[in-house]
Structures are given as structure tokens and as C-alpha cells.
Length: 394
Image 1 (cartoon, rainbow, N blue to C red):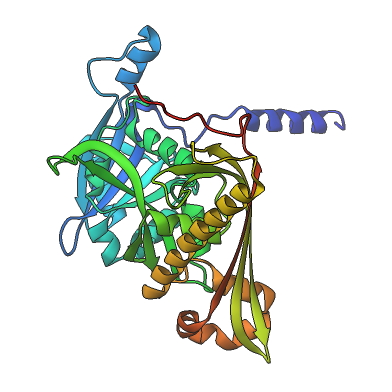
Image 2 (image 1 turned 180 degrees about the horizontal axis):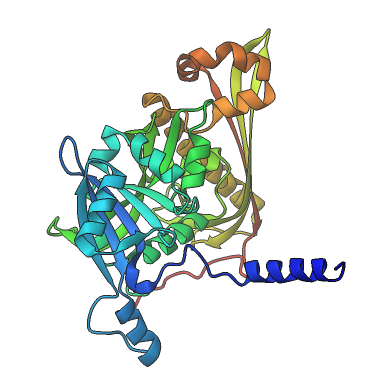
């Protein structure tokens, strides 16, 4: 009998391990989504644009190495009073449940963003199917137009192409990168201001007509989960310097000043330190120290790099440019009264007792607190040549 008891236990355990998956989903029962666009439809309803991956087209490409005649995705629109309501209407229209775990991007139209996205975020945060690494974007256009646009034909699924655009643009210091997890962290109790990557369609310079191409441009500024304004490209670059999220970038500087010519500096590494200065139990100022290692990527015929003073002057011009970008970002942030720089979090970190006293009045204090910016740019390498060749013309 003693031998039988362990044997019975082993059999039961094996039977449990061999059970099938209770939550399995067959491909012919679901629609795998790659991206979602959220627009305001009217005063009470949302317009949900869901980009569905067509399995048959992807199967043709994987088997033959050639694309099918149809697009590998289809955008389906659904209307509802809430995100979950619109999603259920999508099921009624298609006969399939939308499968959210593979969504790469969620795009929100400006009209809806200005109304507020708190109910949308509540559902996104609660639903276990939605990955927190899904990128969040805001557009001045309609979100549905972003998903229906066509970008450079390298990625056949538009939402995944937008995901690649975000990651590459962020690595080159051209735009911010915000996923759901990061947005939730930014919108903490210590800070009610957030920033979100901006994406828009490109207008033709000659006709002013909207093309089918996209660009990551500007940064949406949110306060209490409502869009309140935008940072332009310069202000976005300044924001990235301040929050220490600038991995690499290229800066263009007019040098020498008396010539209409430029040098291009590539930043390889940068470091930003932000600290509050407290005196007599009062916040006196916030100090931002920025340093970076750079290389001279392109010079011009008017510069002789064998002269130390030339390199020193270029470094000073670069420091002036970076400081100007940061100041522009700070001015716009104060204009919107939005602490997207996380100064409140930093005060809470370094001066927790002071933060307890000022947190209720932080919005007013933020507007009046002096910001000191110190920039130290070092050019470590200038390449293999010391003087650029002169253009002799034809």
C-alpha cells in the first residue's frame, strides 16, 4: 500500500501536466491587431480604427517570397461610447475577437486627446492582454489617417513600421519615446504632466496637400491626461537634454560666424544631472549640468583644425546651441505650466521633507523657480584630416 500512494500521486501530477490549454485561441476565431487609432467621433462616442493582420496575405509571402496582390493588413473602424464598447462592436462587425497582445502602437487624435484620455488609459492599464511596452503617440491629424498612411516600403505592416520609426528616431535624438509603462510612471502623484511622441502626415511643400507619408514631429504635452500643447523640434531636443534621454544626435553650427557655412557635430555620449539648491529651508533654484563627448563629423574650408582656438570656439558655439534648446524647452514648459522635466520628482528624491511642504503649491513654485543651466561640450575627435578641401568650382 505504501508503494501505491506515491505512484498514484505521480500519475495525478502527470495528468495535470498533460491537460490542454484552457484559454487557447484559434487563428480562425480571432483578429490579430498590429495597431489601434483612437479618435473623437462625436460628443459621446469614440471612433476606433483597428489594424488587422491578414493571415492569408502573410502566408502567401512566407511561402512564395512574394507579396500577395492585397495589402497584408486591413483597417476596420468601430464606434462606441468607450474603448471597450467600440471593441465589442468590432467583434459584432467582424465575427472575431480582436487580439491585442501584438499591438505595436496606439495613436490618439488631437481632438480626443484635448478632451482627455483618462478613461482610455484606465482600460489599457487594467486589461491583461495589452502589453505595457506598446508605444503611445498623439497626432494633429486623425489617428485613423496615420494607420492608413503609407511610409517607406520596408515594413509591410504600417504599425510595425511606425514602431521602428520611433525607436530609430529616439536613438538619434530626434523624438521622444513613450510606451504605456513610461506614461503611467510619468503621471504619478508627484507629477501630473507628461509628454507623448507626436506623429503627423507630411504635407507637400508645393501644393500643401497631405501626402501618404508620415514623420515623427513635435511632442504632445499632457496635463491631467489632457493634451494642452506641443513642443516643436527644438524644444523636444531641449527636453531630451534635460531629462537625460539623449543617446546620440547631430548638431549643425554656423562657423565661422562671418561665413555662410556650417560644421556638423555628432554627440556620442551625454550626461545630465539635475539637483535642487535649498537655502534656509527654501528652494532657491534648480541646477542642470550637462556634459557630452562629441566628434567633429563635418568641417568646412574656412576652418584650420590645427589651431586650438578653432576647436575651442566650435565647442563654445555648440554649448550655446544646446543651452538655447534647453532654455526654449523650459520657457514653453512654464508657458504651459507643465513640469514634464520631472523637477518635482527630483525635489522629492533629494529633499523629501521640503517636498512635503511645497507639493500642494508646486505648480506656482515651478513657474517662479530660477533654472541654472551649465553646459560642457567636449570635442574629442576631429577625424583623419585637419583641413577641409576647398571647392575650386568647375
